[in-house]
Image (cartoon, rainbow, N blue to C red; front, side, top):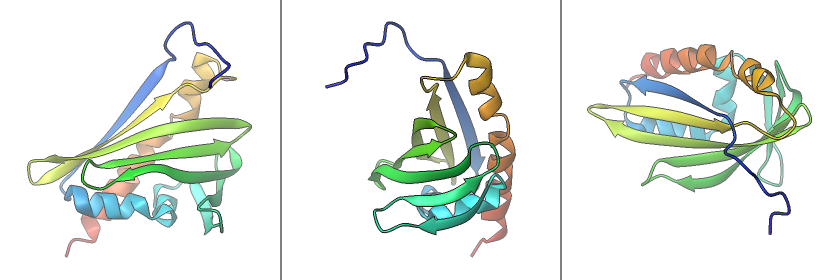
Length: 141
């Protein structure tokens, strides 16, 4: 049971990637955390024994990530992110969009961050999305 009672909804930021690639291809790409390095904010991804991936993050420093909820059929690829003294749950959805796909990342502001800090933390995510999308379109089969 959660001992913290939230009195109001947390600030939320949603980021979107529209891709010409299928949702299966995008799901496969993001399921492998090593591919996150292509975004440019993460380096040295190493899979640990306990299903966590550790890495260096430009903003958060030493960090780690674990896929917490995965369902290919529904396009769910949620993950836990820990870094910079904070813990985030990131809700990821990959859906069909015509002959391509749309991926969304929903970020709820973690406790311990002011709204402005939260926004600052996610500023570079748009560049990561652009880099991932360019890479995905360059590996067409």
